Image 1 (cartoon, helix red, strand yellow):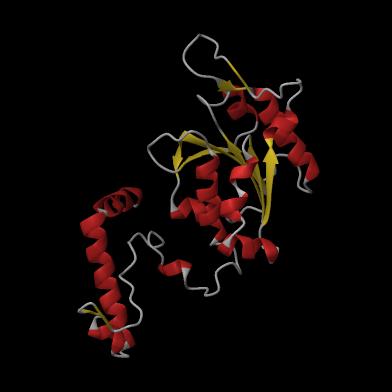
Image 2 (cartoon, rainbow, N blue to C red; image 1 turned 135 degrees about the vertical axis):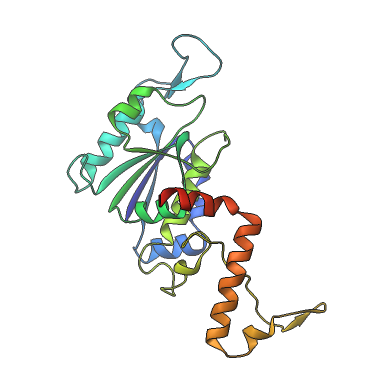
Length: 237
């Protein structure tokens, strides 16, 4: 999978996406990640990417020309036909659809994803009209820019690319993968500061372990995130 990230702060990314699982995916050529400087697509000496909003108001708005022309340049550079189903553009925005594991799995199916990192008071509406396929938000709060959300999206969807996670079943048992939070996990030692690993997990009874994990998953979800079950019931009506 290829991901192009368009940002005015390219230096933010390598410290996060140049380590751990993402770096291994890049080295294995499972993930082709390209961080691009939006200012390379400006046309003035000051490399301006923002301007005052029409109609007045606080803050600045990202100009349409750099973002639109950046997307067009990337599409010309890639092998896919413009606006094909295999090349999609996502704008990181607090106004977008909420990012979920289900959306991460969907985005991971695309051959090519372009991520636009908004900043300031937002982007010119014509960017949405001309090049954006969907807007994505990682939560109901506002950050200073789209860079951190973009890293979250990339880290999450990369786990669903074949070959990135060593055990094929690992992502299937994650929290949110099946609508429930994950069950409690334990490792050695069997007793730590008088807290003991549940005996069923040391019993070798695979059927008993599976039942225990299911019950723990249900109990944890109902206690901590009952909204997950409410939203799931609404989508199945």
